[in-house]
Length: 341
Image 1 (cartoon, rainbow, N blue to C red):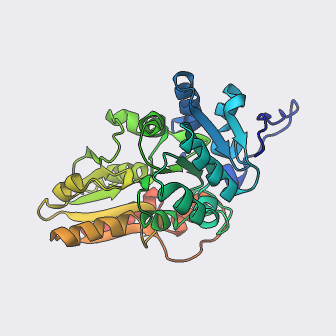
Image 2 (cartoon, rainbow, N blue to C red):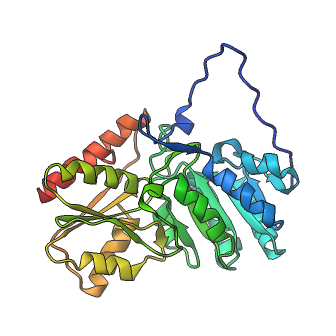
């Protein structure tokens, strides 16, 4: 096992124009409030009081914001190289020895390359490894090799795994300490870089396993996770001007679902139910909610999904891709207007 001290990237020379890669493009809109590297800063703060916390990555410290932790605690940072299976095996070993490992990589690499190691070394043993993965869903323009559009479907079927899809920087900062003492493995979809700030305006506090109603509305209910909650709130404002009341129920914990809150919200008579997620239409939050409603005999006036199509997606600029695949605010509002207007 190789352990390297994190090395900060060289600073650009004066007068050099800095560019942003499609790999680390922000999902924040123009002029939107953001916070830098919320995961890395929250983990570094927590590690001040928790010496058993260690951070591991597969050559992606900078691109998962783990470099913030690495700079603060180089002796507790482990660079495993481009070997995701080794990363997960090492994290399992740390957990067995009483450490609290936070292992970071890209969501595609954890779900596709390292799945069997996660299943056998971590999930089957119920070990408290926090698998924190950047580039979930359609948050990069680099095409199918880096777009983890099916990760929730893959991990939802894995016993013992808790799955969380946070909305913004405010929530990520609260999730890190909340999952530190969780007794089993956690898969966290990680937003990195300049992450939007949204939920602080609603007095929101993250609670593991709980969904929370952010706003009420008569005509339709959106159940959402990840940054699609941000989009749902924006769509609600646009639809309000058209006389359409849109309730927004944020459900960051994908597994286990908050069945009580979801069922109560879906039992409101005459209200359409729409599930919005940054994930393929197959196997994610939408199908989890649909299955819950079917098993409990709850039949909303209308059930629809705002999700990514069942296909490998194109490469390109994120705003263009979000419009093309129906998860931008404008596209989402247009579809809801068509369904319930």
